[in-house]
Amino acid sequence: MKLVAVTSCPTGIAHSQMAAENLLQAGERLGHDIDVEVQGAMGTQDELASDAIAEADAVIITSDTSVSRDRFDGKLVLKGTVKDGVNNAEAVVQKAVELAEAGKTGSVTFGSGDDGEDADVGADDSSDDADAAESDEPVRRGGDPEKGLFARLKKLFS
Image (cartoon, rainbow, N blue to C red; front, side, top):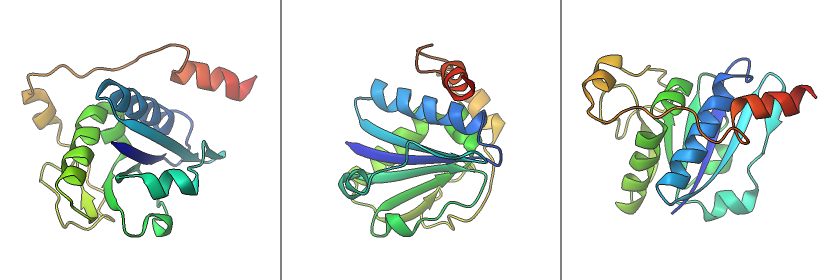
């Protein structure tokens, strides 16, 4: 399945980068093609191409700031917080795939503890840590050091 994602936080240096990395790794682990755009105070990195958006089955937005959704008209758009992208990237990707396979369209909010269907994507609810604590699956963090946050920061500041 083809997915696109946008991560954004007010500074755009750490959390949005971590969310982007985790979404990329989760998509790869689950066998899906995913492109991720990072927005922050320093501008946009890896901006999504219009072709990638057109081919996408679903759009994931993990953001603590306002992200324009005009270019995603007609697509399934899942909206959550950066925390969702950092801590629950695999669940976010799975939810996007599940809804896309079911033929859903429109906007869905996730990460607030409810199913989020037909919810207002502008809502800025944070994840319920109690739900994560009850899960039997371990939360996977980190990944390939060549693609990780520190590698990106090193590249950014060198």
